[in-house]
Image (spheres, rainbow, N blue to C red):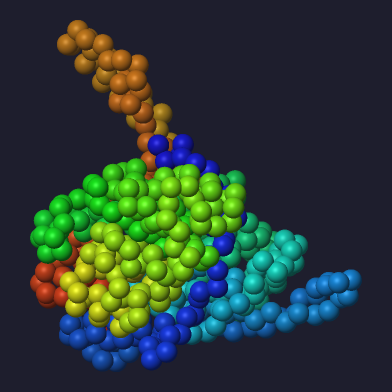
Length: 496
């Protein structure tokens, strides 16, 4: 069971380097790229231009600056912190999206990520509008006490502007943040709103003791596995790129051994029976055509702070070069804009599963499509995180752990059935067999089942549009999202 897997510390996944808001020469910004994809997809709909314009634009952006007193070298001084929160669409409420801590945070970035979150939620039928936030700091340069003061102060800013609440806007972890920061935000919110019985639902990605949900840590990586698995189940897809059906024995390269990258690599190895042959981090990459031990590689990174010189692997000093190595499936799970007009022509992979947000630029996407690659797009492929965040939000509103009221009932019912079968056929199940048969579904079992169902059902919808329109998976996913959002407005009479 997933609950028995290796327990990973937050620090394991916080060394991805500075890579956000990358603006490549002669290529559009991240926000412009999302707009270009939207415009392409919109041409396949018969929706009014006014409605399309409304769906595309970001509804509201909050930009704040606030002072924080810091002590450096025995001297006290004020440090001005800049922060943003974007709410892209209110077709569904609350809005939903992470908060990241990075020196590269800017308004363009949070608007782009908020808009992508809107389309992502619509694509997988998660009833949220898109949001995103960021604080422009390098979290490594601040103490835990300073980070707590910054986080709580930003939460107060959001409260004063009515930009946070279980029914308004629900943040989550992102780069530089985790369960710790979500706990600080929740505690600040409930201190100001002691009568809000649903206060724990103000953020997701919390620790279990604070109302978090089992299965959230691995959700994005597991969702990515499901997305690529469904894509490669289809014989026509496999045949079009000269590969066999399924994931077994496929050579996989993962960029970024962070939370998403690690869990994706784990599940491709463990469930898909694939072979992870290459992994990169911000300070280097390693490659072994015979396969890498993902668990040992993670432990090595924890101990040495790098992947380089991992026993039995070839060093790739420039992490970007790992994408040009031989493989069947490439999983970009860290860098924004890492697949661009410079790197895309060098990629040998036949399948690209986008674990990160915006890992492929508009021009990179065009080049890969011309090469005949299958791209499983970010707004579907990495939707596992927000899907399980939705489950956590539901748990907080219902005030009960999933499976608490049903698990023992299921086990008792199955035990009776097993006893009847043993009596009827005169044979006994082994203790191990009986345990497997009668085991009731706990919270993590239900979360993983719900995630798999979501990814499978969404893929079927995307596949239908792709086949009808003869277009890429990315365009099909955007069309699906745009049409669902449009229906949300027309169904309530907000648009004729």
